[in-house]
Length: 288
Ligand SMILES: Nc1ncnc2c1ncn2[C@@H]1O[C@H](COP(=O)(O)OP(=O)(O)OP(=O)(O)O)[C@@H](O)[C@H]1O
Ligand SMILES: [Mg+2]
Image 1 (cartoon, rainbow, N blue to C red):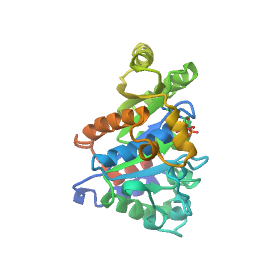
Image 2: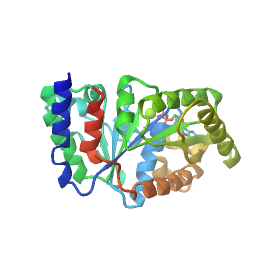
Image 3: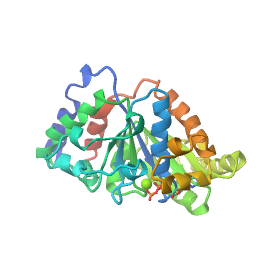
């Protein structure tokens, strides 16, 4: 086990010093399901691309693949084909609007987080090539805290946690924060409150969460912004087109554009040590 881990790390960090521009990794997650992660991820990618950022999304949902559908695309191959060595990263990568890359995860995501030794060099070589294609890798994780999701969160440069003001969503958000504080202490956690009626609603919701964090947990959370509850989100989902394309002037997309400005600013900061895809993989593998 130890032997494998050190070999993996060695492979993962290979060539690290040569990379000047490192790709940053953001994981989007939530305690409760259905709070709007996929909608947020897809439109954040669109809004970031308006800022000139090159984005790749990894659809990390273990259940139904959502990201490709949200873009009106349909994946032929997934990470599973990469792990089995049948396909290269270029062959599984889908291209969405504005050049956004999408890596369909499918059940291969579990495989990626629990990778076998003999497959590793190949996967690292493939994922390493992403670094030249994008500035940011955004992972849309599934809801809840499986082993796989937790590993992704621990390895990311930043975590964006989405919640709604609903009491059940907040309870689950708090539960997730508790685990993250124990397991992923160093990774900054940014909170996005989705489906709010107004700014007051958003501020009050964040306060509630922050108070619980201050009272019961170490560390802090950062308020990244809010998104209005907006019927145009549902309309865009039905049209199989991201909100930022169907309704770029909608209140919800305007909020996401505003959040993208913040994300863009964060990524002007130098990355934490061992950034980039290799840094991410090496941290991912350190969990074993
Ligand atoms: N700001 C919003 N206003 C109105 N409806 C929204 C908003 N955000 C998301 N929704 C609706 O909520 C539903 C769930 O959104 P989404 O699929 O993005 O959630 P999710 O967190 O990715 O779910 P899962 O946990 O199943 O992956 C969608 O049908 C979408 O229409
Ligand atoms: Mg989703």
